[in-house]
Length: 186
Ligand SMILES: CC(C)(COP(=O)(O)OP(=O)(O)OC[C@H]1O[C@@H](n2cnc3c(N)ncnc32)[C@H](O)[C@@H]1OP(=O)(O)O)[C@@H](O)C(=O)NCCC(=O)NCCS
Image (tube, rainbow, N blue to C red; front, side, top):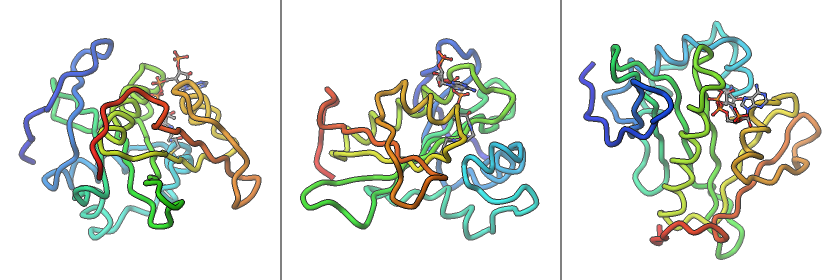
C-alpha cells in the first residue's frame, strides 16, 4: 500500500492522526477498515452484515470518488501503518430540488476511536468541502436508534426530521447556504 501524502494535519486533539482525501491506492486500507468495524457500527453505517465483505467492485467505487460528484476524506493513523481510523463521504443526489444541489453524506469511525473527536472533524471537513463546492444542502439517513449519529449531526447544526421512508430512519439535513463557507459552483 503506497500511502499518499497527507494533505493536512487537522486533528490537534488526536495526536498521530491526519485527514486526507481517499484515493484509488486505498483499496486495501478501506477493506481492512470496514472489516474491522463492529457489527453495530456496520449496522449503523448501513454497510451490511459483519460476514458480508464489500465486493472488489464496491471497494473500487468507495476509493475512487468521482470528481465533482463524490467526496471522501479519511482520518489516517499517520504514526502507525497508515490505517484508516474513520471516513466521511458524500455524493451528489441525482434527484435535486429545482435549482438546489444536494448531497447525501455518511461517516464512520473505527470503534476503538469513538468519542475522541474524529467523527466531528471528519464531518466538519466534508461540510467545508461541500460548501466550497457549491452544494446547498447535505442530507444523511440515520437509523432512529443511532444515538451517537443523531447527536453528532445535531451538534454540527443538522436538523433532524422524520424520514419519508418510515419511522426506522431519521433525515438529517444541513443547509449550507446559511454557513459562511466560500462557495464555488459545482
Ligand atoms: C457516529 C460516529 C461517526 C461518531 O464518531 P465519533 O468520532 O465517536 O464522534 P466524536 O467523538 O467526534 O463526537 C462528536 C459529538 O457527537 C456526539 N456523540 C458522539 N458519540 C456519542 C454517543 N455515543 N452518545 C451521545 N453523543 C455522542 C457528541 O455530541 C459528541 O461531542 P462531545 O464528545 O463533545 O459530547 C461513530 O459513533 C460511528 O462511527 N458510528 C457508527 C457509524 C454511524 O453511526 N454513522 C452515522 C450514520 S452514517
